[in-house]
Image 1 (cartoon, helix red, strand yellow):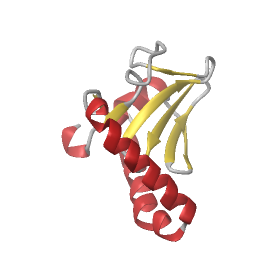
Image 2 (cartoon, one colour; image 1 turned 135 degrees about the horizontal axis):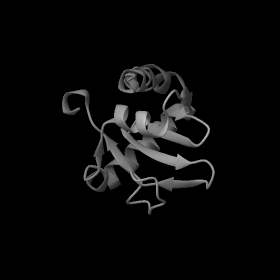
Image 3 (cartoon, helix red, strand yellow; image 1 turned 45 degrees about the vertical axis):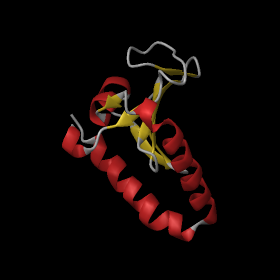
Image 4 (tube, helix red, strand yellow; image 1 turned 90 degrees about the horizontal axis):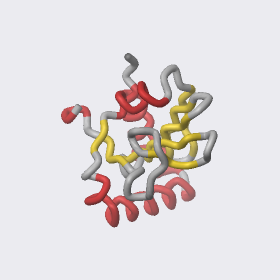
Length: 122
């Protein structure tokens, strides 16, 4: 079992502590993401997940990369897309182009946003 949390946390720290300070575009993305977090965090916090479990379940042996303010784990079928500023993730089925719930079935926005647990909560 890989430690996806470590890769995500390192990328998040770099994004928030360096990239945001050196790029207006990144600063804008950060601000937009934090506003979403402020608005929806209560709902997202009802659905806390261990990022290691999610990546192992949906994208084992994933390719990992940074895409703007998102950290993405991807395989042939799924993308686990983790927001580096707000600390939530979504799971996208690439075949259907839909975001899914933890059971892999399509869901509403409220059902497909998951707050990432802190290391101490895992």
